[in-house]
Amino acid sequence: MSTRHRRFDTTRLRLLPLAERAHDLDLARILAPLTPALFVPPALTETASDLKAACGAGAARILMMGAHVLRSGVQRHIIDLMERGLIDCLSMNGACAIHDFEFALIGATTESVAKYIQNGQFGLWTETGGLNEIAKTAASEGLGLGEAIGRAIWEGDLPQREASVFAAAWRLGIPACVHVGIGLDIVHEHPNCDGASWGAASHADFLTLAAAMERLEGGVVMNFGSAVTAPEVYLKALAMVRNVARQDGREVKRFTTLVCDLHDLPRDFRSEAPRGSAGYYFRPWKTMLVRTVADGGKSHYVQGPHRETVPALWTAATTD
Image 1 (cartoon, rainbow, N blue to C red):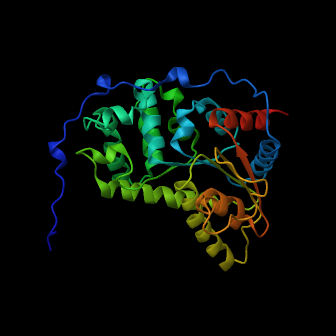
Image 2: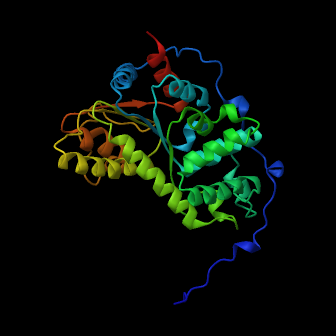
Image 3: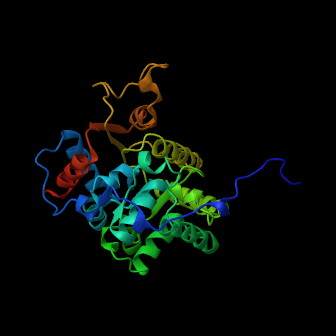
């Protein structure tokens, strides 16, 4: 049966090279060198201690994040934590892949939405569409998105691959899971986008994340700046893990969660916000800080910009 509805013909689109785009961020944004933070909140000191304990026990050390974390320039801190074994799984949205890929490819990323949406050029940059080809390769080879992207950046010897967390994950053998929703990322605008490939490769990453979370007992899950994707993906994966664990007579309930964001939460953030209040709909709060740790886990919240909280966590984790 053929569809009754008209669809947009993407072959009519005009793409431009990245050389013609004004970039809001370049490599100068990335913090260097790795110098200790002047202040480390107690919650990050506790989380760092739990990360070290989890590392020693072989439990999961998962970093979930939104794209603004990479835009804040803390790549070197994240990569160093990965190299030290204090992070053994990454979970990100599609925008993370785009910014990381562009940084590695041209040493710059981020366009002005206000500027480029006016003439319909927003997101339509030729080289960034290379991610669509990587997604097709991932699907055809049975790989996850993050694995294929990291391999393409590292083995493709992209000019700034040392700044890529995806390339570092590939190099270190660490899962870098990418969770996408079709239509949410600029590469989905492109004529070479194949939704089935993105779906298959992203689903593979979801299963990879769930497999990592099977080691969550005694482990740590951290969410920096993802208000929707991270808590929702985490919630579903945790349900799967607990379902299987229960059948095996095991429990997955004693672990640590950390949320770092800009929201102003009350001191009593370990209690759920009232239903109907704005805070109730901030998913990291009720999902990661309250509901999923209610029967044996512990949670921490730190308010602040990622450019401060990530280096502070790194300082706590790398200081004896």
